[in-house]
Length: 264
Image (cartoon, rainbow, N blue to C red; front, top):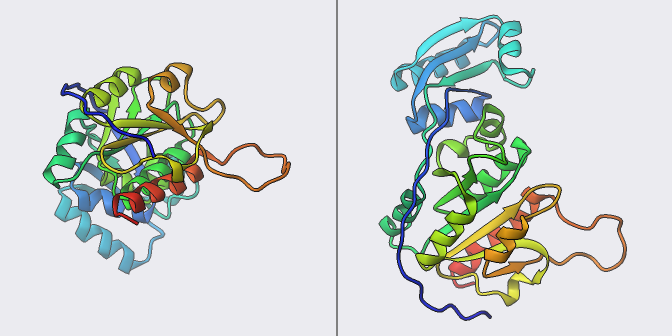
């Protein structure tokens, strides 16, 4: 296990994204219930009356304008046939500040547990990471303003609505965010080849997990700034694949961290 010396205090900031189209029954339901601000709810004219009634009630409660539209038009707007007849224009998805994530942990009386995405480019991967982060008890996710996907409609869909429930901080400089977290006493580990097994790493207490891009993993600067690296074991032998998909690795590692924090 790694020892954790004390670290002092500091702060940082972030911003927000423009209007976003979110589609699919679960993501739109979560968006409406979360009260993050829905401007217009779009319902396909092919939907059954019960579904229309349900989403109309949710939309009215959220203060959204409700419009019936042809399925073909909805498909063009979403860019996919996988909209399930429902979409919503989020008036504005608010990004949190890094400090908000730390405050969320303090409000629960828990040591911070954060996820940092270093150049995740596939919206499906980011959505899956957000979903695992929420389910495993993370207090928030940090993404860079440049060099990675933002919270888009596809991300919302892939997260099954988790993106509307877990705070996401979008920072101008991920390296500075890591420095700030370390100054605030948070120990930062990256998922990377050549690191220690999670079982041999102290992942209790204040901890942040960095997940690198799909192609090259964490950047050289990120790895240099981290307190250590964790690597998932793989079956012996040459199977022709050298690593887990980033969102799969995220799910395994985040679950492991949740178990460590519970004392299991």
